[in-house]
Image 1 (cartoon, one colour):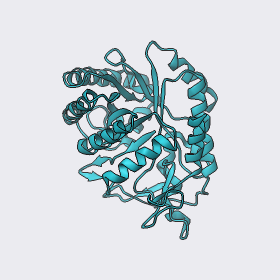
Image 2 (spheres, rainbow, N blue to C red):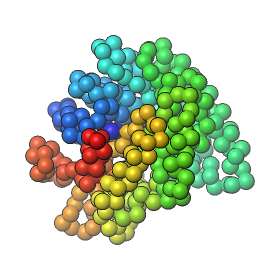
Image 3 (cartoon, helix red, strand yellow):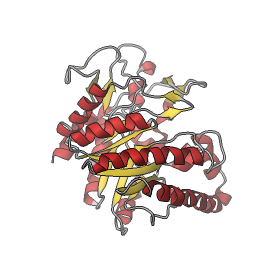
Image 4 (cartoon, rainbow, N blue to C red):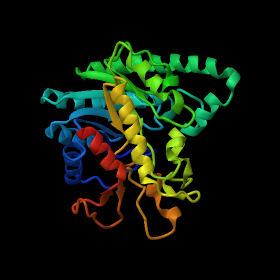
Length: 336
């Protein structure tokens, strides 16, 4: 399971409230009720990452310590990775099973690898000229691998456990410096007919394969959109916080649950070593069942729990959320 401690973009934290007691309780639920044995702790604040990772380790979970830089330049990314490597090593020396993830989709989510001022603009510039696409991808691979070689060397000065990087396939990563191969792999309608074969091919590589970043939202047709699932959300142009849905999108918790079940079955049968559902909850996307359907941001959330505003749930009366159908589906598959 992937657990979000808060993304940092231009100094703003996506998860406003971070109560250590709530974090420990949610991680215990991830272990005991979802039957997970490993958790990917993501976020942009090293203190929060260390706190959550420590709580997960105390619960006996394998920890994937995963700093998630956003809109940083390469030197800033290296500074963050160096800090997190020292923290992850302290945890590993205490006896925890720790894998350090040296960033996620760096070329798209940060500055200095592709032209553009946002992830959407960077992808558009890379993909928007078919005649030049192959050459642009080769150039990107050179830049990404040059950075990752430096990053791996820097991190290994401070961290002596297993190392990986959460890649997009078009980054063309050279996996030599890493112990595990990790891809952010999302199924969309365009690749559904060859998705299983692609997973099987990746799993045949010489190093263990992990899959991160896969998930979908709880509106009808979300699974077909793949990585474009959040395009249905209108964001504040200044803060980038979600405001409302752009149209009418029917709630479909069963569709979200089926999507995750199908992907977990594929990963299990095709030889994937580790898979981390994205994600437990997504702050900023509350469930609003009683008003305008466009205000029910949870329909667009990839979280497997729906966040309640100012009230507690029934299934877990001490938590301000309620499980979705996807929660039950993931729990059943992991239990089996």
